[in-house]
Image (cartoon, rainbow, N blue to C red; front, top):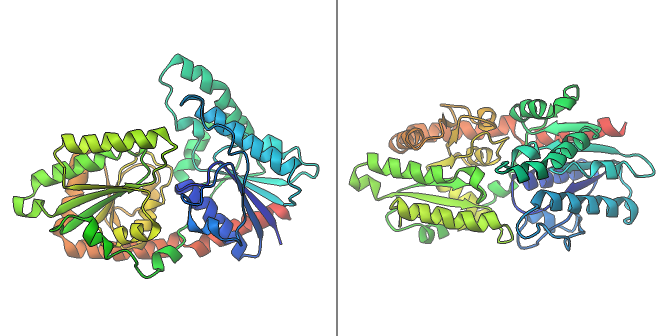
Length: 405
């Protein structure tokens, strides 16, 4: 029985956290001994599986700052993960065979200090250095050693997995010194148990949406600027202009996603989006939700005409997969992970990231109910065939066995 410890910076709610939790549950189902170590775990802001006593979550180092005066987020994240790794190796007494770490690779050299060298599997969601902009010379100077450390320490892993072919290509383009390193693709899976449960909040949608709503579009993403959520608002504006008044009044947009009041960008961007909606004259046409429950999210997916997935060059994105499993067509930007998850014209539409392109796809789904139904069924079949938890579990367990033999 393999003993696996997961190291993750912040066990909140997001795509990376969903993958880590699914991976832990998958390996546990295959008989592995599993623990998750993290620097932050809030029981009120996490996936429910992490509250299961049979899936131990160990939180250390949360007293360390996540930023200094709103700056140095990357440096603080590195220090927190180094602390977690040091605590695990030198003070915990935990025995393990494989460490599964993701997002922050700087802890890998610390893991190498173990008396009995253990295997390290690093899962690259996307190179961290590409997730931040260098808006000043000072920022470039600050990021230079961090970027160098990311590339250097990532290459120290015994095995590197990525979440899509797109990320594999970006990995090779970004980490030039790791050109000879093999990267295998392990697509994120969908843990369908949440989506298969009987609906508990669908009745609540009637009170959530304005009276007379006949068509709901859903944007589901964290409140981050890189997610380009404003595109959904602009697309709704363009759609409303193209519809006759009688039909226009029944169209509604729900913007829902992960929100953490500890994260300054979440707080700021939520306000920015509400201000944009007001400028576009969308009062009464948009509902903003922060960190909706799983059951409400499922109810929204089941009840929406389509999901609007607006990020460009997204490394994978689990939301389109969730939508397709719920028989909800996806309108997504034609770049990054959606090129691999969404079948254009079959399970949804891949569009240029413009309001006009998105609104045309939305209008077609609105006006062709049979197309919408066909796409929904095709999407569910695609998830069952390509992104099932069983396929994910088999592949991941195979990698663990390879590392421990």
